[in-house]
Length: 522
Ligand SMILES: Cc1cc2nc3c(=O)[nH]c(=O)nc-3n(C[C@H](O)[C@H](O)[C@H](O)COP(=O)(O)OP(=O)(O)OC[C@H]3O[C@@H](n4cnc5c(N)ncnc54)[C@H](O)[C@@H]3O)c2cc1C
Image (cartoon, rainbow, N blue to C red; front, side, top):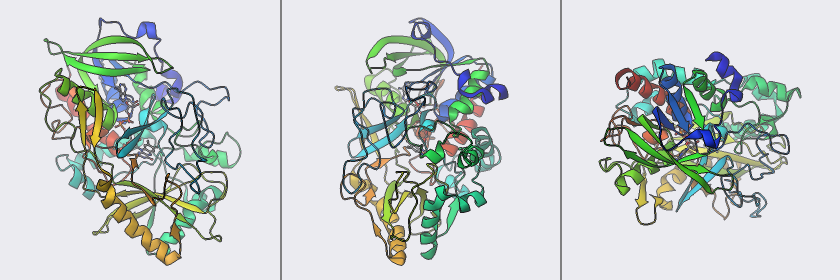
C-alpha cells in the first residue's frame, strides 16, 4: 500500500471504454465518485478483500496538455479549467467592474464545475480526486465543541482519538514553518491582514494544509517548478498538493482490488428483486455527449458523489420510483457551511504583494464569539500584480437550510434556497470586517463579484448535507429503507461544520466504513 501511495498517479488506471462495463457486469461493491468519502470507502473495502469498482464522471488528470502542464494556469484559463462551460465562471469575476477575469473556453471535461442552482451556485471538483483537485488544501479539524453540537449522535471520543488522527495522517496534513511564513514575500498578503485584524483585537491562527511545505521551500529556492507559489489553486495544482490521487486513491488501487473507471456518470439506481443494485452509467465523450450507456450490478453500493451528486442520485431514484421507500428526509438539511467571501481595499502603504502563494495559511478565528461566530481564512489574490486587496472566505454559523428538489417531468435537479437565506452569513462577516475596516480606516471592495455587492452571497465552496446522518440514513450512513446502500461523503453533514470540511468528511467516512465492514460486509 505504501509503495502504491508513493507511486501516486501512475498506479491509477482509467479503463478504456471497451473494457469498462458491459450490460452483464456484476461486482461485489461499487463506489460512486472519487472524492474524499469515496476514496476512504474504496481503500478500506479493498483492504478488506472486497472487489470494488469506482465510477467517476470526470477524467484522470495525469496527461500534460500542449503546454506541458496537466492543469492550466489560474491567470490564463483554457478548456481544462471548467466542466463543459463556454466561458469560465471564476468566483472573483471582475476587477474595477471590468470583465477581465473570465475567458471564453472550449467545451471540455475541465476540473472545476460551478453548478448554478437558482440563487445559489456551488463550486465542485470533477475528476479522479473530486474536490481535492481544485481546493485550497486547507485541512482543519473542527473544534470538538462544535462537532458535538452538529453531530451529537457521533461518538466524539472515538472521532478525536482515532478517526481525525487517521484522516490527517492519510491525507498528509502538514503545517507551514512559522519562520518561512514570517519571511516569504509570498505570504505578505496574509501578514498584512493579520496586522489589520490584530489592531481590531482579533486573533489569527495558522491553518494546516495538504500542500507539501517541503516542496514549497524548494519552489521558493527556485529548485523546482512553481505551483503553489505560481498562484495555482482552483484549476488544479501541477505540483506540491497531496490531492487524493496522491494519497488515498493510489493506496486503494494498490490493494489490487479497486479499479477506477473515468468519464462514467451514474445516472440511475434501481434495486433488483434479489436485493442487489443495478446502476445505469453514461459514458461521457470529450465533447460532453453520451457516447454509450452501460449497466453494472453490485451487492454493496456506496455513494460518494458529494453533497450534490449523492443527493441527486437518491432523489431521482425516489421520485422516479426506482427506490420508492427512501426517506422523506432525503434532500433536506443542506447548507453552505456559512460561506461568504469579501474583500477590503488597503491603503497604498499596505501592499499585499505581486507575489502571492495560492495556498492560504492563516485565518482570523473569532468562532468563539457567542454573538456571531466567524472563522475567516485569509485568501490570496494571485493576480501577478499589486492589487492592495485583502480577500477572505468567511465561514459563519448560518442556521438557514436549503432543500433539494427533483422535477419528474423535466428530470431537473434543483435547490430551494433564496438569497436572503445568506443574510445571517453576511451580517456575521460584516460585523467582523466592519470593525477591522473601522480600526484601520479601510473600506470594502465592491467591484469584484460581478456587480456592486461587497459580500459574495451567491456561491459556496462547501456544500454540505442533503442525505443527513441520522435522518436520511442511520448513524453510519446506511440509507434508510434499503439494505447495503450507503452514503459516505459530505452529504451526511447537516449544512455546517464551522471550518473547511474535508478533514471532517474524511474522518467521518473512516468511522462509517469501519463499522460497515465490521457488521455488514461478508
Ligand atoms: C475551489 C474550492 C476550494 C475548496 N477549498 C477547500 C479547502 O481548502 N479545505 C476544505 O476542507 N475544503 C475545501 N473545499 C471543499 C472540499 O473540496 C469539499 O468539501 C470536498 O471535496 C467534498 O468531498 P466529498 O467526498 O463530499 O465529494 P467530492 O470531493 O465533491 O467528490 C465527489 C466526486 O463525485 C463525482 N460525481 C458526482 N456525481 C457523480 C455521478 N453521478 N457519477 C459519477 N461521478 C460523480 C464528482 O465528479 C466528484 O469527483 C473547496 C472546494 C472548492 C470547490
